[in-house]
Length: 84
Image 1 (cartoon, rainbow, N blue to C red):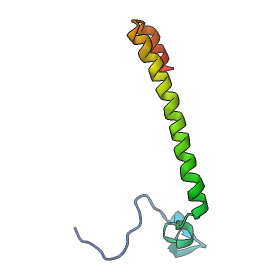
Image 2 (image 1 turned 180 degrees about the vertical axis):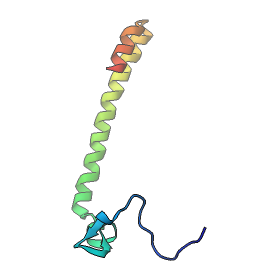
Image 3 (image 1 turned 90 degrees about the horizontal axis):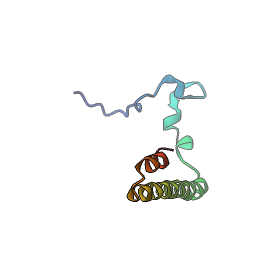
Image 4 (image 1 turned 60 degrees about the horizontal axis):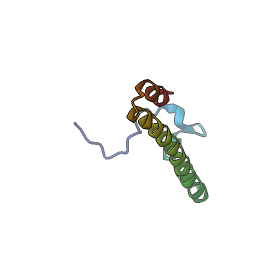
């Protein structure tokens, strides 16, 4: 395989990624578009992690309820809880 010293377009990129109609400027390589505002990162990442934690807590509660039903011998109810 021949290795080129030029940067290659990311997989799945197309000519639709053009900025201002220029064939040499792609959205994916434009520094202005690539840098995320630090304030957006400072807010966005913790917010997304809190949402993930919240969803995992909900799923853990459902799993615990299903596990309790199964331990009590009510397998059909445990499956109903787990699969809803």
